[in-house]
Length: 155
Image: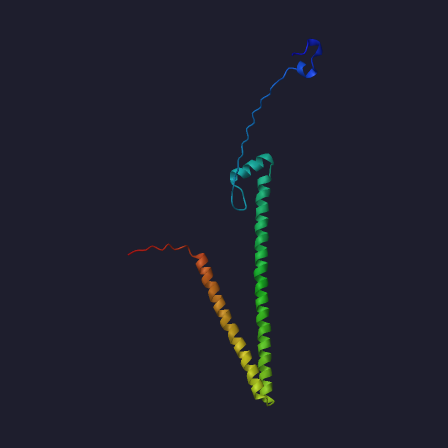
């Protein structure tokens, strides 16, 4: 049953239009390493915002200066702490030896010898440990810095 012409709904009066749209999406990805993009990308930045390339380069230079300043601060701080530690350890070792000599002088031979022995063992142990750890650190750096050597089995 079809509706009569007098009884048509407004929806049926409007012609149905089917609109077809086709959308294409293009994705482009550029990857670069380091503090600066390639010169081509810098040129594109500069064409959009004049002076942008110079600002990006200046920003990279400031970041590099800042990083180097922080690295220098860490190295200097570590060196100062190490030197302070050596001085404090040296003073404590001398005080232990003075105490050992004083005990021996006052007639407490065994106590003085024990205190002096503990002090000398501690000093010698610290020296040996420091020497070994520095050697291990040098070897590790040498392995890191040297290129990988390929091992070939030649009969």
